[in-house]
Image 1: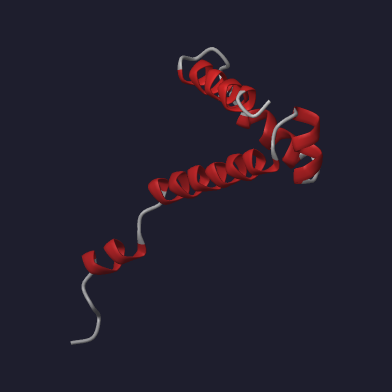
Image 2: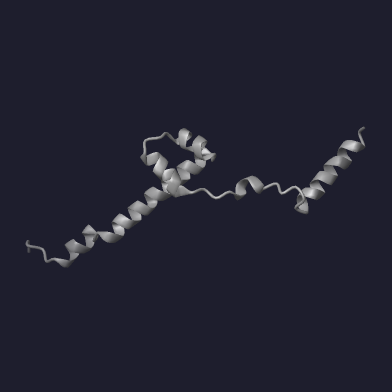
Length: 94
């Protein structure tokens, strides 16, 4: 019995290394962040969205974080910065 367990472990390791077991197959699914954000915008909680879409809560948080980054970047790109507008106008005080 003691010889069988290590040999089975070796066979399983060899199969995993050659791709026979596909150990990372769970991570292959893509998350549709548009669906995630639609669910969050409708008022659902993070755990509810994760359960409904069969994804992890961390994936929901990641989609929300990326959406906030994109919104911030878009807002800052469309509006001029305050520093550049104050430097271009002359100072009224001498």
